[in-house]
Amino acid sequence: MITVDIDKNSGFCAGVIRAIGKAEEFLDNSDDRRLYSLGAIVHNDSELERLSGKGLVTIDKEDFDEMVSAEGEVLLIRAHGEPPQTYERADTLGFQVIDCTCPVVLKLQQRIKEAYVRQQKEGSGQIIIFGKIGHAEVLGLIGQTDGTAIVVEDVLMLEEAVEDGMIRLDVSTEVFSQTTKSPAEYKNLCARLEEKMARYNELSVERFKGRQMLSVHDTICSQVATRHERLSRFALEHDMIIFVAGKASSNGKVLCDLCKSLNIRTYHIDSPAEIKREWFRADDKVGICGATSTPKWLLEETAEHVLELNKFVPEWEETFKIL
Image 1 (cartoon, rainbow, N blue to C red):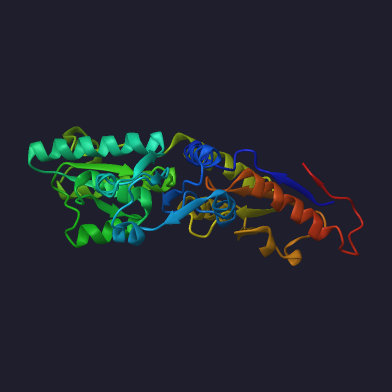
Image 2 (cartoon, helix red, strand yellow):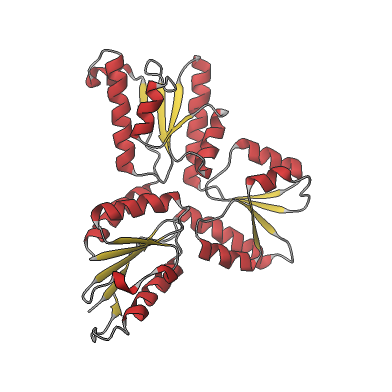
C-alpha cells in the first residue's frame, strides 16, 4: 500500500509569509492601484501566478533602473532585502515603499554594516560572506559594505580566493552567512579558514583563537537551521522523497541536495505535472517536502496528485492514503 506523508515543517518561512501577507493585504484593499515587486516575491512559479492574478506586477533590476518616474506607485521590497542604493532610487522615482525585508535579514544587514564601520575606523580588516553570488539577499548584504565584502560559495572558492590574494590571512576578518545556507557547510568553511589563518601566522589553532583575528558570526536563520535537522530525519524515514521547489530557489537547492545525500530516491519538481508514475513502487512510503518558498497548498496538491496517479495501476489493487 502506498502512503503519502507531507512534511509538516515544510512550506513558507516566517519572512515569506509576512511578505505575501502584506502584498495580499494591499491588493485586497486597493482600488485599481498596482503593486510592483522588485524581483520575484517568492521563487515558486505557481505562487507567483496566483499573486499575479491578484494584481502583483514583478519587475527586475533592469526595469527598475530604466524607470523615469513612478510617482504615486507602490513598490514592495521582498523578504530578501535590498542594498541602501535601492531605497535611494525608489525615493528619487517617487515610489511609496512597502518594506517586507525579513527581520532576520534586516538584523544581519545591520550587523554587517556595524562590522564594516568598525573596520573602517580601525583602518584594516575584511568581511567575508558565505552565500550564493548574485542572490538577492547577498546583494543586499554586500551593499552594507559599499561593495567591498568578499562572497564565497563553498570551501573550494574560499581556497581559490586565498591563493589569488583576494582573501588575506594577516588581517582582522569577520565572517557572516546568508541566512538560508547549510549550517554544516558554514561550519566547515569557517573551520578551514581558521586553519589557514593559524598556519599562515605560525600558530596552532588554539593559540590563534586567542589572537581574536577571526570572528565567525552565527547568522543562519534558526528556523532554517532547525529545518535542516528535521528534514534529514524525514528523508531517512521514507522510501522516496518528492521535493517541491522552484529551480531558482537557493534554499530549495540546498534542502533538496540534503535530501538526496540521505535518500537516493529524491526527485526535485516544480509542479505535480512533472511527477512520473514509474518512480513509484507498490509499497512505497512517499515523503512530500519543500523549500521555504514552497506554499503548503502546493505540497497538498502534490500529495493528491501522487495518489491519483497511482490508484489506476492495474497490478496495484491496494488502497492509498495520505498520512
